[in-house]
Length: 194
Image (cartoon, rainbow, N blue to C red; front, side):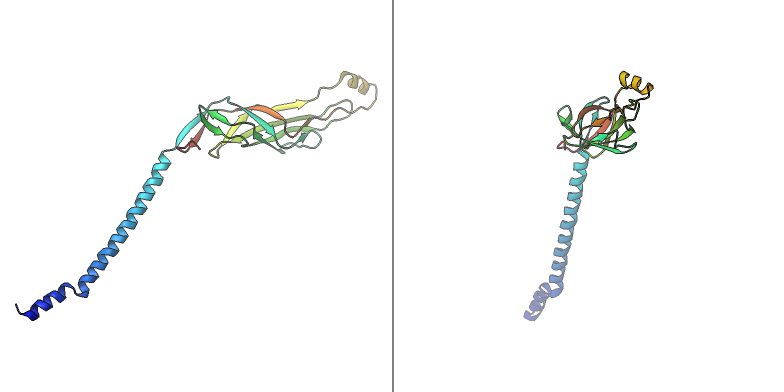
């Protein structure tokens, strides 16, 4: 080989075509690393989703609720909303399934203002559900009815022609009462229990 052919051979080894091949390899390596990163991220998210667990809240679990808006037989109407909050965390084992302060929603089932002839007003309402930590609605049961009994003296006065008003029924803001989980309810928790 002549010295010129040796130089041409060396130039071919360092020619732009060969450096382009190196650049393409670097680009493909970057694309592969990016694709692998996306795959690993999605696999990690999928693993976290499968690491959640389900906890069953048993039927009849007692929940104590505080009413957050006053109710009255004089002002409330059938189907008006009733709002409340949980007084304390509800746990199954050592896992919180309903957090203190969780929203409780219900409705007025009956509202009758006080009347004449000693007829007291009546008010009945139902607490329908409470929010669990996973955002699901947990059904509640046990309607709470409050109503005054007619007074014997007022009834007698009514029969004699006198007009006497009965009493209204009021539930003060902040009043507490118990309700019960209606049927077993499953709550999905993340691995951390939140």
